[in-house]
Length: 314
Length: 215
Image 1 (spheres, chains in turn cyan, orange):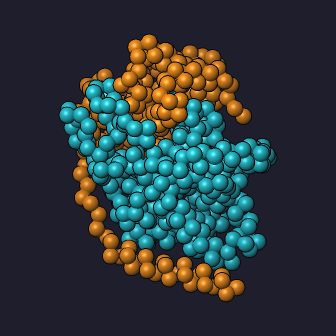
Image 2 (cartoon, rainbow over the protein chains, first blue to last red):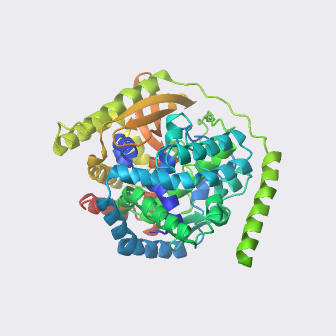
Image 3 (cartoon, each protein chain N blue to C red):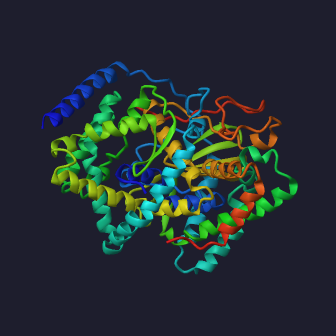
C-alpha cells in the first residue's frame, strides 16, 4: 500500500462495496475494475457526479494516462504493494478480524467527521457557500448529537456529506492535473493533487487545533485513519489483485475519480467515448499513451453531440 | 516552535488569499438538462434489481447463483460490444481468430472475477433516480443502491444502449469511475507492454481465470 494519504485516495477510488459489487455483477464482464467507497464517499449521495465534461481538447480520460514517469511509477507501485503485503495488510486484517463491522463503521464515521472542517475550508475556497454550510452543519451536528462523530446524524436529517480537498479546489480554478505520480507509501497522485495533499495536511483545521500531526492526538488520528482507510479499501486491493495490469487499473481509476471530483466542483461535463468508435473507425491505431475511444469531439461523423448531464453545483 | 508558527501563519495567509479568489470566482458554465428515457430507466430498474436480488437470495447455493448469472448475463449486458470496447485501439487490428479466443477468455475471466465476489451481496435494493439521453439509444441511468450491509446509500450510474424496450448495459460508473473504460485501459496497457501482442493478454486472461481469489 500506500500510507495514509495513499489509502485515503486509493480507498476512495478503488474500494469495492456490496453496492459496487452489485453493479459489477450486472456487468460482470467488466468486473476486474474495482471501485472504492470510503466512509466519506459512502454518504455522498447528495447528487451524482457529473457525467459529462467540458469538451476541451485534452479530455479527462486522456489525462489519466499522462504518465511520462511510468517506469519510476511502476517501481514505486511494486514497492508500495510489497510494503502493503508485509505490513499494512496483516495489520488491517487483524483489525478487521478483531472488530465487528458495526464497530468499524463507527470508527469510519469518527475519522470522517474530523475531516469535515477541511471540507468546509475547501467549500469556502471554491466559492460554494451552500456546501460550506452543509459541511459545517454536519460537523456541528455529528460532533454533538452524533457523539463526537460516531454517528452520522446529519445524514439522517438529510444533510448529506460531500468530498472537497485542495486538489479539487485547484481543479476548480482550472489547474490541470499534470503527470501521474505513484509516490512510494503515499500512493497514486498527480502533480496538482500532490500539491493539494500538502495543503490538506498543513491547513487542516483539526490538525492545527490538535497541535499538529506529531502531537499524541495527531499520531492517534493518523494511525486510526490509516487503518480505517486501508480496511475500507480491502476489497479494492482484492480487485487490483485480479486486474491483468493492476498498475494501469489503479492509474485509470484514480484519474477518473479525481477528474470526476473536479467536475463536481466546476459543473463541467464529460464527453464519454463512443462505444462503437473503435470498431467502426478506420483511423490508424493510437499511440500507446493515447486513450483511443475518448476524444473531446466526436471522432466519427455519425456521433451526435453528447447531451450533458446536469451537475448542479452551487 | 517558531517553524510551527510560521507554518500556521503561512497556511492561514494562504487560506485568506484563496478565499478572496473564491469570492471572485462565482461564475460557472451554464448547464443543459438532457431528456430522460423512461424505458431505459425501466430496463435498469427491473433487470439490475433482478440480478441483485438473485445474488442476494440466501435460499440459493453459490453454484446456483453462478449458474443464474451465467445464463442471465446476455440479457443484461451487451457482451459483444463490451468485448470489443475493452480492446481499445487493438480492436482495429485483432485477427478474427484472436477475437474469438479473446471473447471466450474474457468472458470466463470476467465471470470468475464476479464469482469471487459472490458473497458481497446482502439484499441491496436499487432505485432509479433519473436518466440522461446522451444521444438516441445511448442513455445514462442514475440509480441509488441501499440496504444490505451499506451504511448509507450509494450512487451508481448505468450506461445503456438500445431503444424501445430492448436495452443492454455497456458500462457502470461508481464514484466517477467507469468500469469498462478502466478495463480497457488495463487491457490496452497489457498489450502495449507486450509489444502489441494480443495473444499475451489472451493467455493472461486464461491464466487468471483459473486463479483462485486472493486473500
